[in-house]
Amino acid sequence: MLLAFVGHGVQRVRRGLLSVAWLGLALTTCLYCLAALVISAYPVLPSVFYRTAAIVAGAAALRWLVRQDADMLQRRLGRWVPGPSRLIC
Image (cartoon, rainbow, N blue to C red):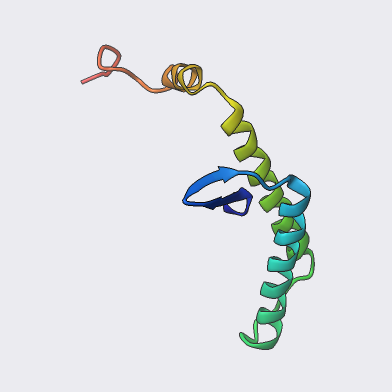
């Protein structure tokens, strides 16, 4: 999700999903190469793709979250949290 942020002083969600996908693919490919060469671990090639998919899903969720009304979202999520009158002691 943090790959979607761009900012100088003030952080904003400005990167598109395609640029986040390419950046995520590059980062996970670097992790794959490090695991294969340096760490002597057993890297799995499909891990590059599902990690990239997770990065894109997180960026899409962040972009959706930024577009939501904060007060309405707080009320909706507040229904799932027990309030002081609903606590069982």
